[in-house]
Figure 1: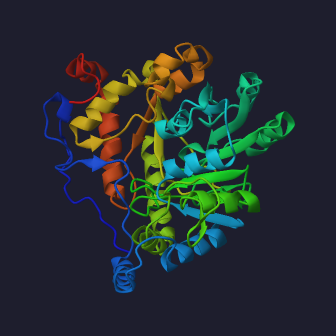
Figure 2: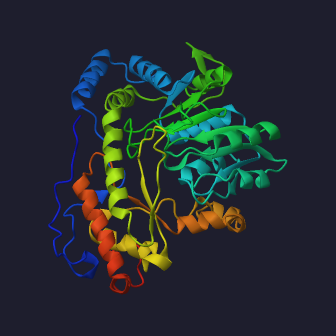
Figure 3: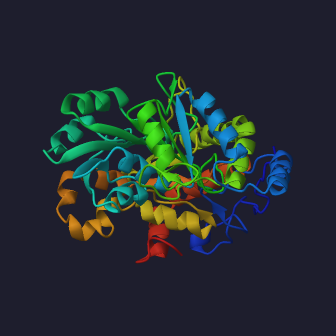
Length: 412
């Protein structure tokens, strides 16, 4: 596999922080979610075959092979490859004929909520567990009304939701249950691959995910009838030549995207290994820093280690999350504040549901503290050490950093 490591670091010995007038630690930006690149040889050979066949889309042989490999990898009955994760969410919701209200976290990428609102379904924002950052089942129960038709949970950071508790609630209350597994590819819940729970689980293979198909997604389900409807719906409802049996749209994955997916599956172990090495390095270097808590992964489960997530406690750190973020960005470390400020604070939800925040105290607290740091095959252990050194030095000079940031705490 071809690994792209950062090679544009500056010496950090005795160096002043860039936010305080020094030179940036990195000459070029270090991004969160820079795409992983598999071994190009097999991928380019597949592209040559696709060009020779002149079969670029419409459930070609590469897409079919990709679906078969995903089915085997996840241990699920059906995988339907889709052009992207958002369309996959919308198709699953529509295939289940959801309506009225669906309970969903606000602490998630906005596409989770948009997939519902786009179809005239009201997303009812529910609070999260402060430790897992996933839906709190006790809060879910409180949000159910006579208009509720489903729960849409998110396996955030690749750490599973409380699946069994949510399944019990959905079964007892007669609700559909979907999982947005955009972060969860390659992870397990109690030894079973994510993809096997609820009515269906939806994956994103966007370029920023550790496993990508350039752009793409998939729906995994063990429901035969649902899978059949989804296969019709993703291709305009066609069941054969000139025969349409269902309303549908164009949700098909291209052959080129599937070829990237096959190459990525061949390199998956290498991607995970890079992520885990970086995760262990971050954990080692951040362990003793006051006010910094790093999200931990369960080593007894399979995990993709896709995200390095820290929470900043302003009281102990001496800096706000945004002040520390500004110090990092001044060094060309383009860390991110996922998923600030929460979907409920974005439009159209801020206007449509102005009272939503009252039920989301944990969401707002967590959203004000989280920073996601760079990792992946484009980031090496030396980069991690430098990034952690920046954080350490910023915490050693909180007053100077805060003064330098001033009234523009995000961005420099």
